Image 1 (cartoon, rainbow, N blue to C red):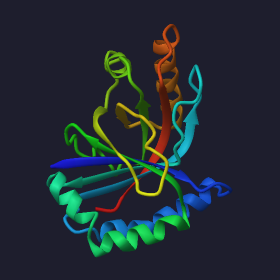
Image 2: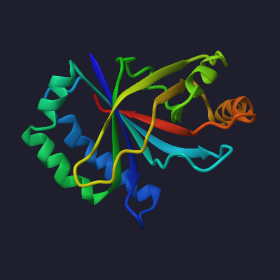
Image 3: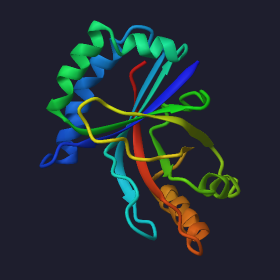
Image 4: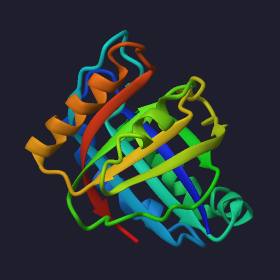
Length: 199
């Protein structure tokens, strides 16, 4: 199996609620892609401030699974993909795509809340791994995927998914990560998300 992630940013002037309503409706277009094996929307509900300049803008994270990269390429040139692309201007300001090195699965996508930690270049993923956080899955980026007609993708080298956190647990985990990076700040961003599984 092959996994792709995307980071979505709402249109300028839209609220996050407007974006999420449009994105939920948009889900039916994605679910129609031929060869799609799994599809999860991760809706950002909280962002945790980290030391240094903001690293990543995000209102949502997409996880898609296909049998292989070729199946994904076919899906994104299908008639269903044209309908999907035609709908994107109704809610989407910017999208960044990422082909991942391995398919780590979609985790417990029915669990509700999780944290997504987006990391730039450096040793951030190893430093977070060293925390030994329960329920952590790490997706390393193999390739950035540019979206036609949009600015270049936001540079991310890894995504860490931390499952099984409630709002209070999310804050504790974000604080633990902030302590680890306090002495040597890293390009990272932490978001609490609610997952919605379509396929």
